[in-house]
Length: 503
Ligand SMILES: *[C@@H]1O[C@H](CO)[C@@H](O)[C@H](O)[C@H]1NC(C)=O
Ligand SMILES: *[C@@H]1O[C@H](CO)[C@@H](O)[C@H](O)[C@H]1NC(C)=O
Ligand SMILES: *[C@@H]1O[C@H](CO)[C@@H](O)[C@H](O)[C@H]1NC(C)=O
Image (cartoon, rainbow, N blue to C red; front, side):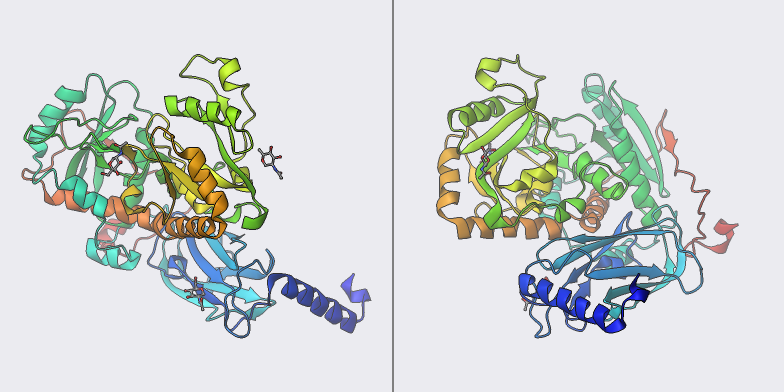
């Protein structure tokens, strides 16, 4: 079709389109001034989905603050040696002038060139050359030196939560724990006993409901493909509730759990949900920390000023919240999508409503985060949106809560919700401040809750815990090997192990 049009008409049309878009978004992006950065531009950062960022800037160097259009930037990833690259790429428009680009490689490449283009013009320092080998997620090729891996990953020096959790355990004795922990918890709880030895994983399960073991197996397998883990032996709690209720000077048992609480001494890890979201990014149908960034609803001024909540009846305060909503429907829209734990009294708690897509939550300015069985595992995703989070004070926490600050990243609400209406009113009366808190929470999620940091967290936790061991970790009776999945389709040759291993 375009062949039938004179070239100048095409030219004028595109200039016109360009100007219109430019005036809507403030200004047009410039290829030279636009910024491109992130771990996905580095060959040595191996992640299930690699990612990097684009921040559009105009000809005067000013950052754009609104989307210049979803298709503004084109990203191509090519290998100079292979004709076809099996790489899935997605450019996610965060609609604030920045983009998140993620790509998943299904094979290992000796070199990759990442082209970031704006109307066929190279952006910033594009093409970015990744000198390989550039390993894909499935490639079993651990970096022998943990400190080199940490440096490549730009891991933080430490995590305050890890330091605090381990401070209750000046030393750990694998021999004694192997005896005592199954005796104390193995009958009534669902536990996994893991040993990592020579970077191979061994496990024994206790209890009936051990299905959630797949998440822990998966992150350990993924880690051992990337970096050599120290020999270590530890127990993972597969249930919702943290277990170690004893207090010093009573003898404590170290247990790794997905959720911590003010009354327990469990060692917290990122939740299985967040962990899975990192491992399965781009394969996952539901929510993940990246897709949520491109689905944050209408811009702030157009968001509905009713506070929003959906969920199931897993806690008394949730019932209170729905009652409050029924009494003040113009302030709170809270309803149940499922009744399971309590007897459903429709006259009190209203009819069940249809499930709402999580992305639609962000049509609302105020998001209520309220505990379920334990901490509500949706907080990472709520923070990543551009609504402000009203967080119920809670004795339960996830691995990152200690880094969050009330009034900076979220608006605090009392545990009994007694001040919820008042806090929503505050937010309505202080729109600019509420928006600022929303964006600070979003920035927190973008900085601290992405895949690279989650891998760092697990690695540093295991490394620091391993240092506390006073007896040698052993492969215990009845442990089975957790095998790496076969990657027959796209085998990789690992250049980090010695040649003998490759044959
Ligand atoms: C533009 O955005 C980048 C990336 O978020 C940021 O580092 C930089 O400080 C911003 N520049 C200005 C002038 O605000
Ligand atoms: C805002 O949301 C509430 C509750 O969902 C709804 O009743 C109301 O109509 C919405 N307001 C606007 C302006 O859309
Ligand atoms: C739990 O502990 C934190 C800090 O140690 C505190 O701020 C919070 O109020 C406590 N919450 C509950 C419900 O116990």
